[in-house]
Length: 570
Ligand SMILES: *[C@@H]1O[C@H](CO)[C@@H](O)[C@H](O)[C@H]1NC(C)=O
Ligand SMILES: *[C@@H]1O[C@H](CO)[C@@H](O)[C@H](O)[C@H]1NC(C)=O
Ligand SMILES: *[C@@H]1O[C@H](CO)[C@@H](O)[C@H](O)[C@H]1NC(C)=O
Ligand SMILES: *[C@@H]1O[C@H](CO)[C@@H](O)[C@H](O)[C@H]1NC(C)=O
Ligand SMILES: *[C@@H]1O[C@H](CO)[C@@H](O)[C@H](O)[C@H]1NC(C)=O
Ligand SMILES: *[C@@H]1O[C@H](CO)[C@@H](O)[C@H](O)[C@H]1NC(C)=O
Ligand SMILES: *[C@@H]1O[C@H](CO)[C@@H](O)[C@H](O)[C@H]1NC(C)=O
Ligand SMILES: *[C@@H]1O[C@H](CO)[C@@H](O)[C@H](O)[C@H]1NC(C)=O
Ligand SMILES: *[C@@H]1O[C@H](CO)[C@@H](O)[C@H](O)[C@H]1NC(C)=O
Ligand SMILES: *[C@@H]1O[C@H](CO)[C@@H](O)[C@H](O)[C@H]1NC(C)=O
Ligand SMILES: *[C@@H]1O[C@H](CO)[C@@H](O)[C@H](O)[C@H]1NC(C)=O
Image (cartoon, rainbow, N blue to C red):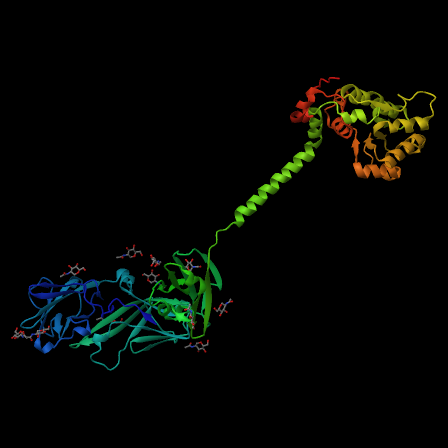
């Protein structure tokens, strides 16, 4: 049990001030010791509160005064204020007695003066308790605890037994868990409900008169700490990165151990011992505090300057109580400049740039190549020397319905020539336009394909049986030749989305898989004829290098989809 009493502060400390006045040494106890008493009750103050000061009193004259008053306090036993031995007595104290008192101790050569302060208080509103003058005591919830009725010693010169009455919140305690014993109150099975305002009272008899002596106590009840080994919250067997030469403070945060039972070691030595010469590392002990209802203690390790030695050592914090002992260690490792962040960043930026470049290229590939082609010498010797007549041989199905026929014929016979021949300068061989009537179809086809740089096949989905492309011998021969001789690139153009290629001949499926197909998208009549639309760009990309170049094409790239009508030079 911890008793905080204002009466008996540590008396081993030396006096605050010791100055000579009238050849007297002055000791001022006013702030160190507080004397207070309830109005109407007896009180005594000892001139010699510190036992160490005990003088050979026989050789001294000791006299009490009210401070500033030259009339000494009488030693008359009938006087209300009287001196008895080294004490001044108030029997009883009244409000007007509040103030400063002086006690002078003299022999023929020496003189000392002690000053004390007295406060006489009243209980307000008829309460038996005055919190301002109550003494704080605390106990923990435990099977048994006790509180003390303090500062009764000087009433005790005439034993035997103190008969003390105990009150809680001004009501006489009758619970049998509470048992007065001497100056204590024993509390069995203490609970938090026992917290509160207590008053102890005992009679004091002097010269045939009875006085009441009472003390107020504020009792705090704390949960008892668990009956288990202490805990170390930090460190946690880990390492800390610190720079060479830096100052670092490492906490050892614990609960459940008392101050003397938490400490650090290094290389199995106490810190003080290990660092007794350098003092580079020392412990800082802090006061135990209550954190979230639990006692908490921190012992910090202050490493003034981290050196190589500290990197090698293991610092261990230990904590122990009667239920066990725990330890946790921490090591220091040197801080290496961290390249990882920047490195990852660089990789990331590089990756993003590459991705962006790839995306850009794949998106604008066709434009880039067309632009590149157009920016080169328009007439390459290769084109002249390959000995071929046509840039593309165009194969297309003969449609079964009038509507469809119109759409295909329109595309093959009108748009293709308009864009590829007129605007871009290609020379096409279109079956049905360029073959002379009466010629043997197969031989014409074969010969002409051999003279063409590309084979362009127009595909239509769900063709009716009578117009199935794959059944025409021209087409088979053409595809056969294109595949066998490999020299001719095939351009597939879908008039509509073809969902099912399995109905197509294998050769077509193969080409579609290898080179893909370009899907025709019907735009407005005007736009359809623009060589700068995506569709025509795709077609032109697959076509061989042009023979002529249009200067305006050079400016196409940035404007991409929304080009103005081009001027084509032929
Ligand atoms: C003693 O100290 C108190 C406050 O500390 C002060 O008020 C008082 O005047 C002092 N008395 C003497 C005699 O110095
Ligand atoms: C104490 O005081 C008395 C009278 O007041 C005197 O006779 C005596 O000598 C004094 N004693 C000392 C030790 O000063
Ligand atoms: C007076 O008291 C002081 C101690 O307070 C002591 O040292 C001194 O010897 C005493 N003088 C006489 C004459 O007794
Ligand atoms: C008595 O109590 C009342 C309220 O409880 C308060 O207002 C009043 O100030 C108290 N009187 C004194 C003398 O403290
Ligand atoms: C304290 O508690 C125990 C068990 O709860 C009980 O047996 C005992 O009688 C209690 N003691 C008092 C003084 O009430
Ligand atoms: C104790 O007294 C103080 C001050 O008079 C009061 O505020 C507090 O509520 C009292 N405690 C209990 C438990 O009655
Ligand atoms: C002392 O206290 C008791 C009970 O609390 C009371 O009956 C008695 O009158 C008091 N005596 C004095 C002198 O105040
Ligand atoms: C140790 O406890 C104190 C007080 O709660 C806290 O401020 C500090 O951050 C703790 N230290 C560590 C390393 O967790
Ligand atoms: C650690 O202690 C061992 C003996 O227990 C000793 O041999 C060794 O030199 C110590 N290490 C350091 C760095 O002082
Ligand atoms: C730790 O030690 C350094 C150097 O001795 C000192 O400057 C610093 O104030 C100390 N830190 C603490 C919290 O005591
Ligand atoms: C941490 O290390 C100490 C020895 O330094 C060991 O006793 C403890 O069990 C370890 N704790 C954990 C959680 O590993």
